[in-house]
Image (cartoon, rainbow, N blue to C red; front, side):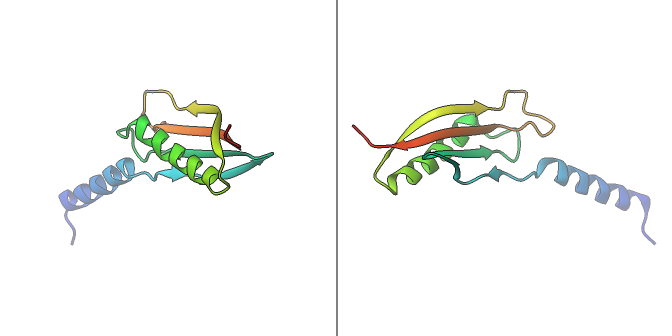
Length: 102
């Protein structure tokens, strides 16, 4: 027979784990037509800094454009706004073009 304190501890552990273990979401490079692309990054928790997410997204954008010896031209950035709780975790979306460097 299982006692109630053991069930309570197990239940609490599962709920705590699900609450704080979300998944990071990374879109990869998404073509939007006319040599325009989008890349996004979302943290798994509210404790990740926005700077890290933006840096990772920009690295991916630069890698995409370097495939064709082109440079990144940022068109727009969209960022989640604090407070970072209840699923509103840090997120950045960057829309960019690959252009010929002058």
